[in-house]
Structure formats: structure tokens, C-alpha cells
Length: 64
Length: 157
Image 1: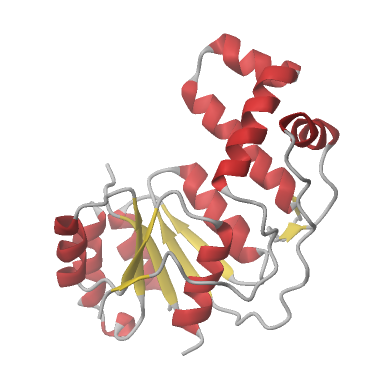
Image 2: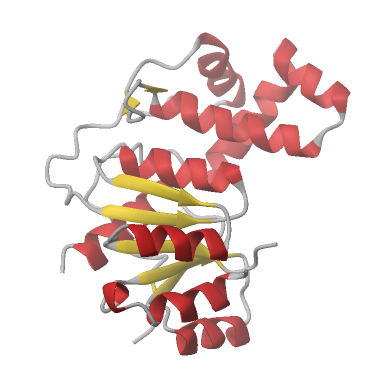
């Protein structure tokens, strides 16, 4: 199962209500981002990424 | 609302000079100058070369303890020498991330090396990281446990 289908599945789970979902991808075209957004993704990180970017995502999305 | 997250700055203390470019430089030096690296080249295995890169990251972040959390330690000698040969400053040991929010995080990727990197980086700040190898596994893990954040690949086999 790919990430888009998983995100759709996660968003059907009551326990996942409001939980941020961030995708990490080499995909740079807007179509994939829009599809993931429509599926329920919160944001994305583009590969290659730095370790501090992971920390930034956690700090921004989990602390809220 | 969807956001571009890649340009965010972090208040955490992982080595600021630990970038993918740095790792690439060190990896090149490591591959060219160490017996283990030469063996990888001789074997001609591109996947193995990528693994060397991941091993460098692991070595930089520290060894894994029995509990699975990285314990910070000095660089191993071959790795430190590879840094020097590449002309790249040695990374600072990470400082304790005292202000880190403990979170339970699910990382979903069909690449074990990506999952390992995510786990190492985030568990070094005290987060609990669970791995899933594809979308189906991710759904199963999310059904069994509550997570604060999901990090996922999009294109998985």
C-alpha cells in the first residue's frame, strides 16, 4: 500500500483525528502534493532533508 | 492547510554541520580511504554504499543502547579520519535536548535506512519512534497504538 492510500486510511480512524501526518518524499511536482493534501496530509518534507528539519517538524506540529 | 516544512529552523542541538552534503563528502572519503569502504566499492553494490552513509550517521549520533535509544559517544577512528580527509569539520556532540517535547511518532517507509535515520534522529531527543515498512503496516501500527505524529513516504512498493 502506498502512502496516499495509507493517509486516506489513517484519516478514517477516530484515533487519528487531528494527528498531523507529514510525508517525506523526493516527489517535487505539485500533483503529488495536492493528492496527499486531499488525502489528509498536514505537510511535507522534501528529500534530502537534514536531521534538524525532523526536529523542527516535531517541535512545530506536536507541541501545539 | 498544507505547509512547506523544510525551511523551518530548529531549536534543537543536533550537529548543525551534519547535512546530507557533509555526509556525502565524508562517505566519499570513507569509501576511498578505508579497507571497509574499498571492499564496498569492489563489491560494486550501490545499496551497500548507501548503507555506509547510514552507518556514518549512526556513528556520528552514537551507539544504540540496549533500550534502543542512541547513546552519544565519540566518533569511531575511521569515521573521524574520513572527516579529516574530506576537510569537513568534526560534528559537535549533540547537546541534551532539554526542551524537547516527548512524542510518539510513527515512521512509515519501505527503505529501512530511511526509517533508521528518522528513528535515530528523533529518538536522540527522547521521542518514541515506531517503524512501519509500508502503508498496510502503518495502518496496523496506528490501529494498535496512539501516535502524536506520522512521518511517511509516499511511493512505497
